[in-house]
Image (cartoon, rainbow, N blue to C red; front, side):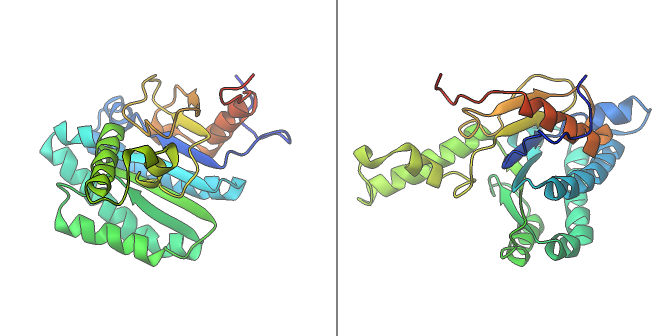
Length: 241
């Protein structure tokens, strides 16, 4: 086990993304409802957003609600929407004061009108902030994002604005939800699982993965630092020698 404290040689990734897994199992292990686990997970989100900003990361992407999560019980989905409202209601002023810019990445399809209004509000209020770019992946799926990207590029080709030969990786990137942002250097997955779970499929081509056997509500700033220490031991060749 590497030390949890950051050392002087720790590399700080520009962009860290996190698959926040384990809320339900955390709650069930305590004889509580899955909703209680999600509530505990929100408290962890607050700590990690603050910590990521303090160590100097410039981008933090959190996988909060996937396109596959619609398969969950309606009660749990409504609870997740309620937690989003609570988080924004309680934290928007603080995030804005601390110079955090929030972008919501994912599909707007099927989202209730009040949620859409809320997401627009948080993006608008924080749009000029510059310390940390916080991406909330909500109703997000990597395959869905790629489909939407292809549809958008196809419309431009059909309208004569773009030829097939002009479609490059840069054009693809400019039509993704994360357009204008660097790809993640590091993806952390909590919960002890080893899947990518349809997360940032295009963007993670050369991302380093750190898989930690800790449930998200138990994920601490020290655990975040441990992931940074592991990342710092990696040699990123990006396809080279």
